[in-house]
Image (tube, rainbow, N blue to C red; front, side, top):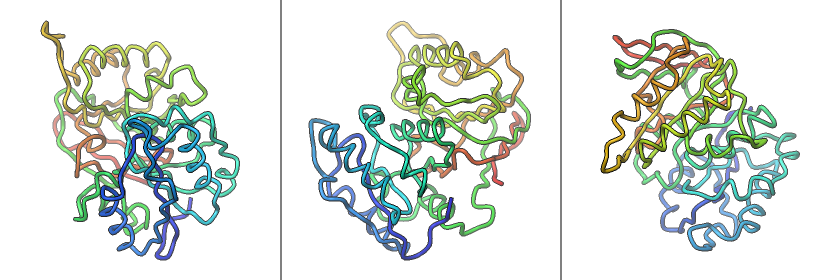
Length: 301
């Protein structure tokens, strides 16, 4: 996959929740400051309830961008919900001939997973235009540096350990994304093959028993067996019931993979973490170093 350069044409897409021109203005300005030509397709700001237009409308706009060989990257405006409603309407054959970066996280996990499952083409788990407010942040800087290849080691991150980590080193492609989305794709052709890979999971605004249900489902589907490693990003703003579930989200995840021996690392800087949602390529080999006593690290190549 080619890196971006000044003058390249990139586009905004809204496959899920609606956005406004006012919300997108800071992101467009920032992308243009990087020397990119930003394409805003007519109809991008349509609305149908929560969604950015009808299913047929959103699919048609995204299809046009996927097919256009001059578009070098597609930045998904925001997550929410809706991409799964259009994924089976999309034809990726021309995209496969002229691949481009698909950038986003959260609901964009539908696109990440489907592309990896059916084509094996790399994508980028990174912040989205709805989170770009004009000033540079760790999220926007790491996205820029990866897409432009600014540094040879543009993916090289360290963070503090957790006592729940399982020590070890793994080198493998990273796959995954939002846990709720991965759970919703189980049994479909968009379900990813996780065997021998580093699985990334993260989530937001879920009840603890939902986390338990989803982890058990991934386990029963074989998605936790045979991993090279498990990379746990933000488990943010979790909820409990009046009668407490009795375990934290991190403890639930640790329990679900207790019987395996691959490295497991928590508190990774990916997911619903605002300005600290760092860019991470999916489908590209990375090395994960996990410890419960010293800083953890992931880097590529």
